[in-house]
Image (cartoon, rainbow over all chains, first blue to last red; front, top):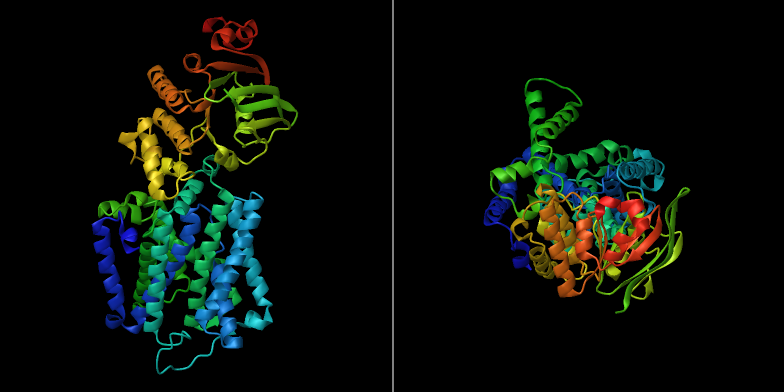
Length: 335
Length: 241
């Protein structure tokens, strides 16, 4: 199993991965609380970016409403916890089922009726907006007033109920990110991965090679939605509150896709590099501005915009492909 | 020899324009059958109906004894019909090998076996030296051979070639002709080709169907067809002889 995972991956890549993973594992012992929250944010965006990348980067289906899956996942697990005391790891099953079903519905409507490209992207935005407005009026989960999880000072970490200090959340998010990376890696090298890439490159040609494109696109949406909903569960239990206006908002969907776009769409390392660059630079900028006494709301969004512009102009394939070439780390599938 | 492809009374209209009208022909197993005709004669429409990309308005298509008119393109491929496109469309960001592996996965149990099957096809099509190149970096003749390789990797019983020689230099055409002949001779693969390049048609086809304005005007052996007065006046012209 492990041998199959490592097969064909250049040694330099493995060495680099080992170093990065060791650093990430040691981080809570070195970093202060603030740095740890930044790292959690980086991992969060790396994870969600990886999940979105499966749908667009691999299978070529552009979603601009991915916040819907974060929101559904978060709300499902949080509601089960608040109303019935069901632990998040159990609630996760409900969250995944709900998001996967929603993804399947969007996929079915789009792929059965030939909604593709930009129109598919608009459909995903529409669904995220339905959810935002719907949850605003869904009083069982707090409506527009929001859903809150009970907060207390915890003497010890309760991993089962996801109640505890930032270090615990950090390790949970790190495990999720590593799992998402490995899953993407395995999928990309399997039959499914080849079929996705073929569909992304030319759907008609893929069909002429006997690929049931409807089925493979559905699988991509369902996997991506399910993975994203797990991030939603984390989001809910980490921040302890959910507001429809925030979680389902289109700006959230856009935020999710910045990391893979900056890092490199369709690559395995792109979402991670992108999340690291974007989040650390944005946080750094905020620190510098605070140090100089500036207080400009929206500075982060302006900064994201500038980053996007720079990447689109200088490295339209994202930061990772040229970086990998420079470090001679490319595997063939990723060049 | 038994009939592999049996087309009867096939018609297709596009909002009033009769693209294909009442076309019938049969292709025996192991044959190389050519469809020729001027631009707009309905050749590609006919092709698309056989490959499942278009559903016919009238008529039937039987492949290996079973009705296939109206099936989806992926179903047609699974039944054993491989095709190339008039405008080549390899997967640009994938390497030559990956392109062919996608085709080979249809019949292979896993990616490893598909890679082995793909390697054979790549060698046969003379693409070995370029297997790790991206399809987008290939020249047109290489892309055309890659399309044939990708279709062949699905292990078809019938290979549909849509103007595979168009845009090739004579030496490249001869190379492709040699590859196709060898394939046909060694594996017994049945080939149906649409072609403008008469040099290739005459060298390959055992039988030719001529379409004009969507309707068949002649069918026969290459020598019969190029001497047919109707074919000469509507398509080939005196120069072809």
